[in-house]
Image (cartoon, rainbow, N blue to C red; front, side, top):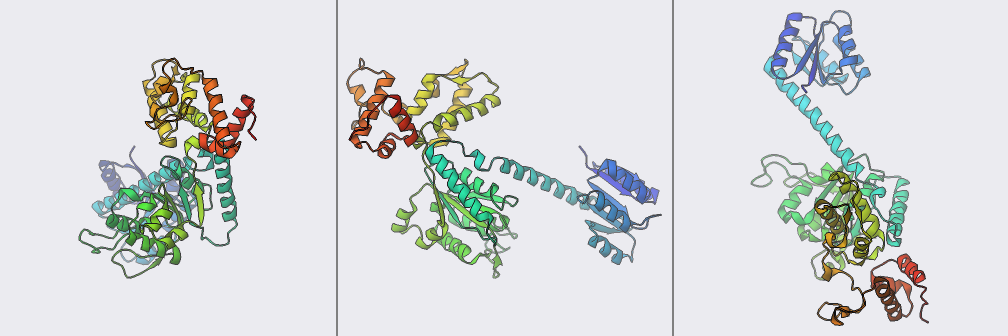
Length: 471
């Protein structure tokens, strides 16, 4: 749809010529010969831009400009004025004009101004759309799960957010998020931002493992023109781009030592300096980092700075693996099934009881990310109204043993007993619980950890099978 441009000009010949030129250039141009007529059209048309003559009969251009801003302050106005009226143009700029042109108007120059203006408006609309879309995918509500580890995690995040809401200054503590690949570290970072005090500001993220050290430094800190061979023009770094908001650095453990030093300075001094620049500038940004590596071991190995780790880990959240979240597997599976049913238009699709048991037995080495991909694949390939255990295509060697200990070659001892072994699920599950409790001498916490379930899940199953804890 062409951009609507309103021309408010009492010289009708000039106004019509401009309108014809703009229509040929792809705009939808309208003309008003007085300020009053122009204001009336703005109420209904709401144009993308207004070309406004200063010397109008009745109310002059400056007064029309002020009234336009009262109607809708977002409408950009370009003032047209004659030679010797530069002071008027300055007053118009102070009153909110986007730009001004000196008559006689050069049409090609007018076209360039409009292209720049409309293009900027479009980019701002797209940026607002993407920010809203990202915000809609953030927040604590997107941390799905009701297991004890997830309840504790969400309570800790909420406690931090509540504490930050009362801070007198804008300096928020750095946060380190750890956990295995696929556990949802990015979701926690988004929750901290979009449920926090900086939610209206930018959320900028980068995976540090995907960019080589030299390029990572330039991406984070930016550079001046001529800073290095390919630096043809100044580039704003991500730290500056996230100004006032949050910078989320995933895989922080892969950052090279030189960049680690600069990050440490950023955290300590709250300043940033572009490559090739001699001037430092204030950096108002909240730093959130994440890693699946053991940073303490990286410090001992000399690959990560201890002082940087201390500054990054003022607040620390450690995400539980999916295998330690018990029945959250089924809660998440239903969530992703609902999303994929809508996406692939299979509204009646559901899991069979066997599929649910298979998902509970599986260890999910890829965590939530693997579960999401498994569900999508199953929905795509499903031909009936149900998803069975076989259709999940889980790798059996990665599942919990269905009874018996795992032996050296990775197979369960039920397989060693032959095909005619008793594989009744309830009996196998009960036997597994009894042996786990015996091995941990009745310590429910240790037994739950051994089985990869939550304490609540284990206690439920203890009651289900009427088991007695060993003395």
